[in-house]
Image 1 (cartoon, helix red, strand yellow):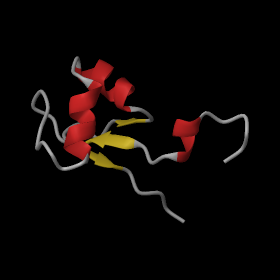
Image 2: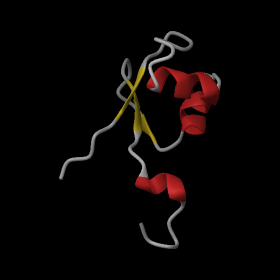
Image 3: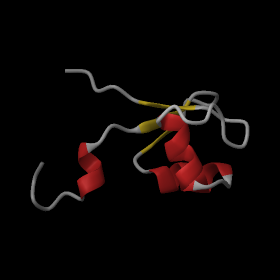
Image 4: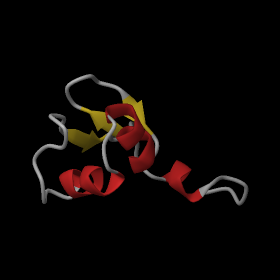
Length: 63
């Protein structure tokens, strides 16, 4: 990671499975679905299945 890049740029993107939209942060996802970033995080950790009717996954980078 370069020094000038914010920390979250080094993390995988988050995809809303139902729409295919991709985001860089939990907060961006939460704004899009009018939800809570903590609940989005819990879904990605497997502690919840859905939030506001959506499910989420991390986008794997191709090497």
